[in-house]
Image 1 (cartoon, rainbow, N blue to C red):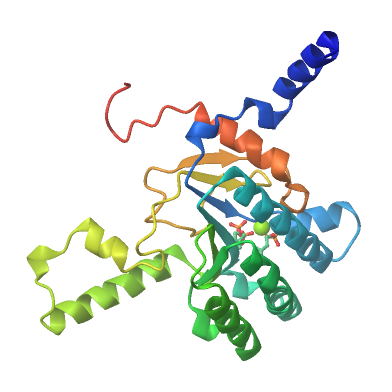
Image 2 (cartoon, protein in one colour; image 1 turned 90 degrees about the vertical axis):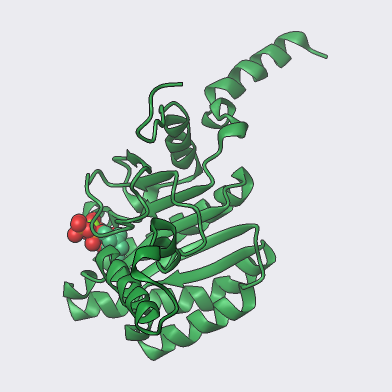
Length: 257
Ligand code: IPE
Ligand code: IPE
Ligand code: MG
């Protein structure tokens, strides 16, 4: 073996983001606010929809990377309850993109063991989108390599109110007593019921806010804000975020170990 070449390669590997990742400390659940599509398009003198289209490519790359890294849950914020305020044409394009890509990508995602789980007030989405969501859910429901939560017409406050309504119904029906309500029971009634909370939340494009995403679930999530616009976000950016996360001291209100 060429010793010098071996040494050089080894050195090179350590410079690459993947070489610096700790495989024993991979976050189980990563959440991403897919933001910055509009700015990405504007920078290129393109219409906003071009940014949304490019954002889909970023998502495909990140799903692949999550599978490779053995991340168990990926949550992506795709459309908020507040995004209906946007011009009608932009909302239509977003719904069309979603419907089209669910239809074309579901088989590949299924082959790769991805469970597609759309969350939010789905019954307010266009019927064609609802049909594709139902097909994707049915096809992939038994998969467990990666759960892909796609938040659509999702709002953290809406989710909490919906959970409160379900809880009230249980109490009214006599299935639960007021005094028996715990954080665990409440969490089980959220759209993410049964799933671990996100370990890491990534927000591309620099904004330092939650914009109504996962208000309950992010109580102890590590937040990473990247200046990279979502359509440019790739595996290496995800790895950088994970390395940053791996160097955090998660105390959960306790003291340093
Ligand atoms: C995220 O990108 C996509 C959605 C919110 C649907 P934006 O469209 O918000 O992009 P910016 O923030 O205007 O750059
Ligand atoms: C958050 O981004 C919603 C999604 C990425 C789906 P926004 O672009 O809607 O958030 P604000 O308006 O900058 O807070
Ligand atoms: Mg935005």
